[in-house]
Image 1: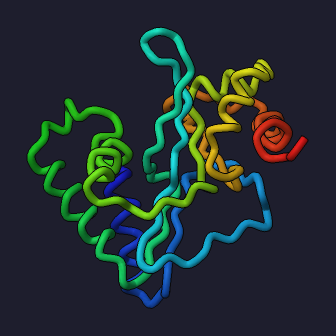
Image 2: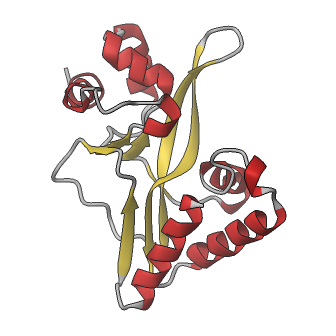
Length: 186
């Protein structure tokens, strides 16, 4: 339900007079403090370069949208469409048995091949494999990921709920390793 709540909140802010609105999940690390996303024509979603292992254990990346970063201008046709679609799914699904992220990232990933959303590649999301690679300083994995990036991340959603990250995780260490291995040119 939080996926719907964020969309409704953003629409409410636009209705109150904002020219544009940005959503960043609370578990997003700001890597480049000088970064300012460009104003979209109407809508902009975060871009995952999702690192994972395939069935044979080989590293691969999947490029897809995520909703930990969203930016909408008043002229956005996407925001109302996402609200409508999310409400429609919620009305027809058993809320006690709803799959995690079905009306958030999974919905965006299903729609993206047809809708071709504009994506902000500097607003990244961290897979479990990438998080482990950063913590263990797995240079081969990190260089594979770095070569797959379309641009260095300016922000990174650490996907705490997916990874089960507790308050004891050193987010400064993760930020420093992202800067060291994925942003800074060596």
